[in-house]
Image (cartoon, rainbow, N blue to C red; front, side, top):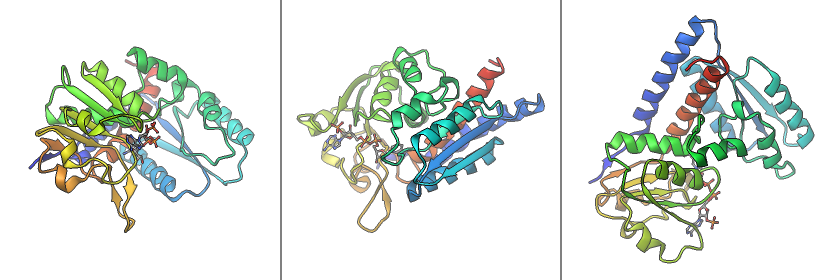
Length: 284
Ligand code: NAP
């Protein structure tokens, strides 16, 4: 039976570290602020935004929430981003995705000042991630790296397989594993012999968005299996991309859903916001 990687425990540790540093900054008169912008009424996005607000309270950040109606225009949203870019109280800006279809997500992401782009989605920050001289880590992949570190398994020289190539998860995930000296393969919907490739992985990261996609025949005995997926099953229950029941018997380490990667994403967002505040104030 695999050891369960406890994302709640690891995220609590990361947030405690962030809080400690935030407390020191506050004593120096530096308040840390995160602005979260949500457009429309997507229930899942609402939950994420509320969780981010709660995390800000936990670590002692000031959170500024902007809940805009579905009919908000791109121009109006750009005006808000511009205002937040210029606001000294705001260290980090997060625009919750997805945005309504009439708003071009890239034009919004590109408008956020890179030094406040705590999601690390701006092309300038993506470039830094590619080069490896980044200050903002992409939140979900960075959270996955913390979870892998928690197992004690060293990525160096390991065969790593990432299923999914999105800009938010798959691609930056592969880069972080590569920076950690893993030998990385990225799989996607056109990959041939996906099961064969996955079954050779010492570290397998699933970011597909399909419930129960990874089955036990696709994993190597003793592998580290990280499930990024957040899906709803036929009963509306939250579940991942990995068929946990069968894979837990074969894997060495495995993340549950919920309680695995999800809490880490928010913890890493807090860490990035702290980094933004430290950079603004020239604190190492
Ligand atoms: P996405 O943009 O939809 O990307 C999904 C990827 O999976 C694509 O690259 C796609 O390949 C690939 N794929 C789809 N069907 C496949 C198949 N049959 N075989 C192999 N590859 C296949 O999704 P995402 O934004 O990366 O998110 C992935 C999952 O992670 C979702 O469940 C999402 O909710 C979750 N997520 C969780 C967190 C968290 O904090 N836990 C954060 C972000 C996302 P193509 O490129 O070829 O289409």
